[in-house]
Length: 387
Image 1: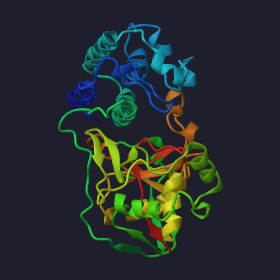
Image 2: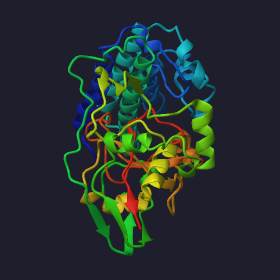
Image 3: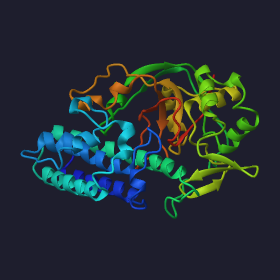
Image 4: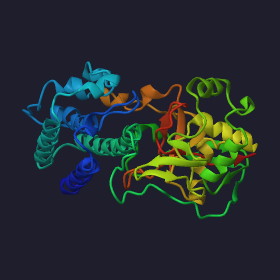
């Protein structure tokens, strides 16, 4: 069992990191919600506190008095078990409560969590608290990626904060890593934390395949664009072809052409495309079309996990060619916590790895991220496989 003091230090550090990410923002930035997929920073601040209040303090702390009864409606994300909630596309209209009350809420919850951890809580409570910490780290990544989209729709390409550099350059030469045919095990193993969708470690058979040691770069992706990649239906799934036509998609998200040169919006403002940097902000549709153009394919999530120790990863969430489904023997926990992952196992694709927005110590080779195939506001990229 984790000692209370160590867990408290971890808790306070993670909570502080969320607020540090918000320090460069204006009050107005905290409320913006340009599209339904993006949540306002103000909502992230409230929701992550609501999680600890709802699943720890209200359940395990005797005589706990909730900060504000209306917050259960405002900051519940998708937990049907917990009750009614504000619709996702209405989060940006939440002018009340004021931002300072949200920060007061965070302090109130933190104070009570500190008292709670000094009361020798049961192991079950520790496990839920650990889930809450990893949940907040997930929201730190979402907070950054949501914020990038929020800033991208502002005129004149505002900078998030000085010195925040999201550029990462691939320095490795292209190599193909051969993985022999055989039976392998995938899924979480060991004593450390994992989400329930990583459980059910199991054997899987793989045919011999090869996987690239490096991610596809902006330069390689630009070659695809210059060769008519977005205008040739032969590279695209039917659904994807409809998507690019209906939405006039001609490049990765945040790219724009000025006086014959390609630029991209970043946390540092508008920057000229760096050809050696891994491409980012592409959908599963675009990743598949690029692979088709190359005469290659995306790896499955099984192939990715089995070979992940053989290459560097963590700069981009990497699209795989695997649908997000349950592992063998997967079972949802009872109660509201059971809604965390299992209910989303339909119509989504798996991404593996991590990204430059991922919080420290929040990545592992068994982590299964998942998004709908058209989404691309996350730092998503691709690695190719063949055979």
